[in-house]
Length: 353
Image (cartoon, rainbow, N blue to C red; front, side, top):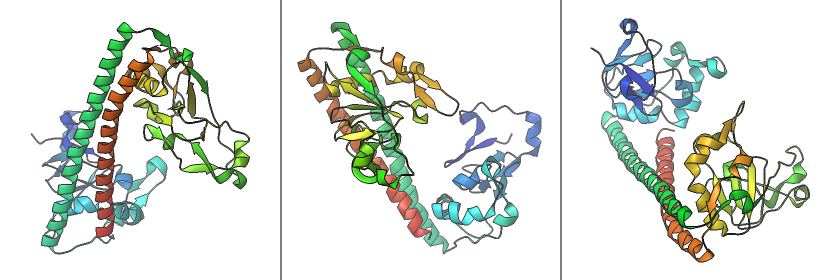
């Protein structure tokens, strides 16, 4: 029996039973499925946004897909790289897209007339080998980052679970004063392009915040609250709350928008509290995040009731010193992963322009 394959955007094909998706289908309908060979390319339902996918093995795929098989000698890995470039997706493939919004699809009648790069096969293979090497390095780096994050979560849980048994616990609301922010009118040019940091959720990408993509003027500051270094910043409303709890420590004076909450700490070390909150991240996401019409939000009143163990200041500092070293190492490895991905994407764009 032929292997039924499914599309994993950005990764090609995978046997359906390994895809981790609950897909129901009637065996009788498989008679209409299309045969693909390893190295074929597939125009799938989301190709307009993610490019074409390569078949990683022989099998059959949904009749909704269009199968492409090269007539000339070529390197499939060369074209796999090309079909995921920004140049191809947004400047070449886009010419064959029909429909709007979720109704968009690739018209093969238009696609078949598109020009594709072709060079000597040996050159294709050299380029493909370069990207295979880079992709393998990125995959290994991603595995390292994932393992470090898992270890970090486990260590956080272990440390704070032990502390909670030997120290007094206090509700978070007893340790912080919570306040928010806003967005100055975007239509008023006098409010923007100043020197004052204005934090939104897209700036919450690391554990320490020292700048922002957008900045406001002193005029806009008249309507805002200015927060100072040592304040904890928390994303309280964003789709990212589905899977993570963005929390950071402010290192400069800054303002925030309405999706961020500022936690001004009193009664304990702010850096200690940062780690104490993150030690409960999984529980917070699972029990204290609600889904609205369009976005997730944190149930702040319940969040402020979480219990925080509060040992003496000296022990808090020892915990900070231990966890800060690990967190710094994780961030270095994440930066390395980001640089490798940027290198690969940059080479893709340069080689195929």
